[in-house]
Amino acid sequence: MDQQNLTVLKEFILMGITDRPELQAPLFGLFLIIYAVSVVGNLGMVILTKMDSRLQTPMYFFLRHLAFIDFGYSTAVGPKMLVNLITNQNSISYNWCAAQLAFFILFIISELFILSAMAYDRYVAICNPLLYTVVMSPRVCWVLVAVPYLYSASLSLIITIKIFISSFCGYNVISHFYCDNLPLLTLLCSSTSEIELIILIFSAFNLISSLLVVLVSYTLILLAILRMNSAEGRHKAFSTCGSHLTVVVVLYATLSFMYVQPKSSHSFDTDKIASVFYTLIIPMLNPMIYSLRNKEVKGALHRIWKNLSKRPK
Picture 1 (tube, rainbow, N blue to C red):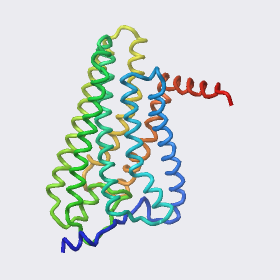
Picture 2: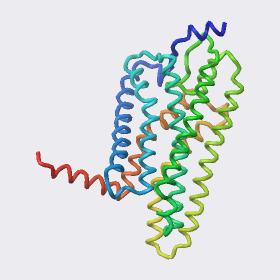
Picture 3: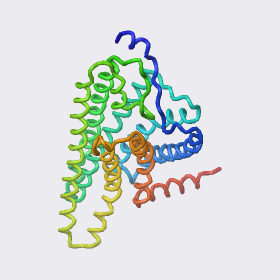
Picture 4: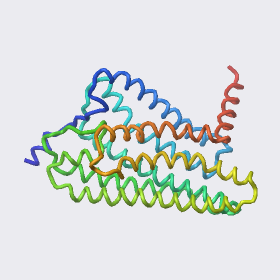
């Protein structure tokens, strides 16, 4: 029976954002704008931090990778959700579902550890400014992004392969608007205890370890700022951390809402709202936060615009 289910099940049906037809067109327009702003903002940040000579520092190196990751996991979910809204066909093939799950896990885990690396970078910049260029060398920076990518890719493959080599039952309706691991587990006929344990252990490790690095870094930063005699120095230190701290608070608050609340208070609608927030809204907000609160980014945008306007037509 399991083998029959494995051969028959060729696609899944996503329940989508809403089952009310009158809301599909307005939601499509809204999410299309959000996704377009996210793509332009994040790809623009990648290009800007690569092209501008004044943004070739460790902080903007990490910011470039954060923008790439935000683009990655919003693109893993956004286009398919938009297509389903406009065509009213919520099906996704077996292979595309596996690919969507793998890429989403890869990028969301990478985001946690890149934010941790950025917190460590800010700690070194404020607490050890004279050693900053030595400690945060290009080699160290590449290690701090390469390790999260490799770890995230490995974990993503383990979870995705574990789920998709298992036996699915005939029921193929996923209670979500994208292929996520927990809704997929409810469709398995075989035992899910091993996969659930893997997800639980690594989810706890990813959240706690990355958050611990952020908390320790910012505790040491705060102590260093309080010891500063200059009000201008304190203001400058706070301003360099403000954007990153805002991004961290928004992401971890959303993830906490999703995973820390008791099961009795969980509902599909609230989970969908939180999922929309961290798959589409946060990737749109991050480049805005870093652009609006950062004089160097705004200066780089102004320089590029000035150079483009000077070109002969």
